[in-house]
Length: 90
Image (cartoon, rainbow, N blue to C red):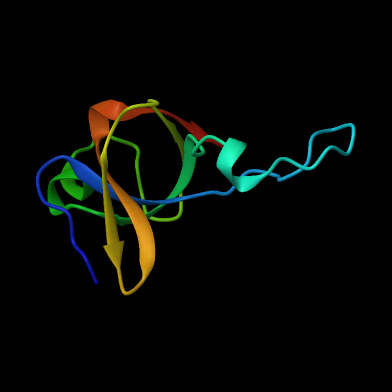
């Protein structure tokens, strides 16, 4: 598995609903990439930093044009700096 270094986390994007509230189906090419994700790995530095309340499994919201897309074993992930994380969804 991938282990981030520095103040970075590995995030798996959470897919948004493909329908609007009124039932209209949104085609894949019209959808924007979601800005929410689940943390699947954190660096040692993030783990040890008491000022960063991030842990694996947290659902987070991140900035729109942040991070680096990577593919691991056919699955897409995003490597984010902790500064790009806007908040935790509880």
